[in-house]
Amino acid sequence: MKNFTYYNPVKLIYGKGSCEEISKQQLIPEDARVMMIYGGGSIKKNGVYEEVKKYVKPVIEFGGIEANPTHETCSKAIALAKENQINFLLAVGGGSVVDGTKYIALGMEHTYSNDTYDIVMKAGQFKYQKAKAQIGVILTLPATGSEMNCGFVISRKSDNMKMAGQDVSVFPKWSIVDPCHSMSLPDNQVRNGIIDSFVHVYEQYIGHYQENPVTDGEAEAVMRTLMKVAPITLKDHYDYQARATFCYAATVALNYSLACGVEQCWGAHMIGHEITAYYGLAHGETLAMTMPGVMRFHKEKNAKKLIQMAQQVFGIPNPKPEDAITATENFFLSIGAKVRLSQWEKGKEFFDQIAQKFDSRPCGVYKDIDSKACLTILNDIY
Image 1 (cartoon, rainbow, N blue to C red):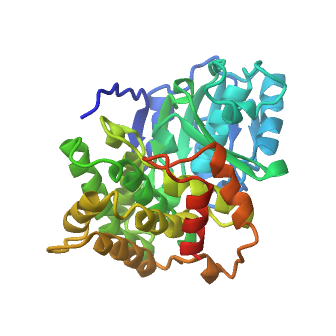
Image 2: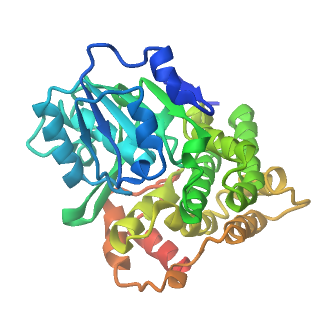
């Protein structure tokens, strides 16, 4: 097991009717100047907006954060927040809204350059100006775990970039997860959330063998739980126990506890981000393809762990490494996902552009997914 420091200051407030805890626990300081941030407006259709406004009186609201939050839109929110002297950002939505809110908080303090996107483009090359505005979260879509971590992913439309960043100053102060808030979601968003959560666990699980049996057991339990609950919560969105289980599994999948003392991969995510940027597919839709693709690419290097995964997650006796890969694809297919890019009626016209990006930033636990490897994986998942 590798040395590690685990830190997570987020107060997680969980369950039906949890919004009332905003006033009960005085979660927002009396002198706070609140900006309420949300996405395309679904919260005004499903009753969440009205529920939140019972307990929060924002100075100003900002709607329109995209499903893949963009630098361009967030920059408008940064300017508005500065203009109104905002010191508390309330994200009401899914992981994209939460990610955008974290970027906005850092962007409000950014002075390193005239380009706020340097926060992700030049991460590690300069010291972040720490976010001063506190962040609160009311989650409406379980998937990214962003409600309980300090990471975020932001796209830039002008050059098809999609980059990740993280900083401890953007850990939410608190996050409310009421499973009822996600019950009106369409099937495709629920399915994508299940896949995203499953792949989050895999990325922290696959890149090591017997380094930390504690996190191995936890990761395997979360993956088994997601597989068990997926068909139930897709069939009946209003089954509270099933949706509550899914919501909590999605949070645990990326609250960083599964990463303690181990190497991580994230190759499937990095390639998936590029597919989203160039082809416009949702994040979960890309991961249903890239996870099996990266699994096949690393089959020999990860053979022992794939055998363990086949046994402990899928219950396959006397398995071979490829059995875990086949079982993963079958799980995704069973919940209605597509596992090949050609099934989306997309072409190969962007493959070379995507692959070139990996020459300067090879990824994966072995840092062996360069442009050549990326092109191999892209052709494999086509």
